[in-house]
Length: 115
Image (cartoon, rainbow, N blue to C red):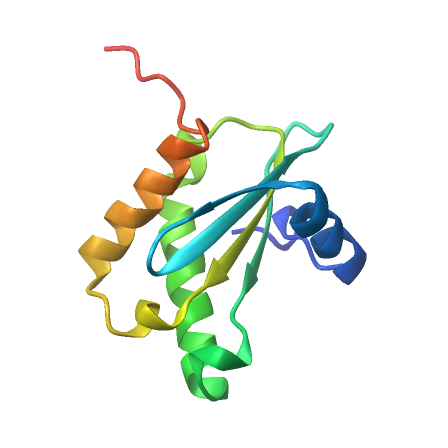
């Protein structure tokens, strides 16, 4: 994931969390807000409730990695904030990917596939 496609400023993250629409699963929360850009920007958050620094970094790496797999299947023009929840550390990767897909479907972000 390119650094230019990340939300890094805390003001931007607060704006998305405050004004955006949220969707939740057991292992993560997705908050999204439309932007006027031709790309999606993402922020990944893991709070102290997840655990120590090692656990938080693991959770964030898992979220970023999973997002990369969906990156080209998503509609463009959104600011996304993915927030890790504690069960993310104990969930197997395939279940985790399925939950992320469900979140994207709930948010109607997945592009329609034409066969």
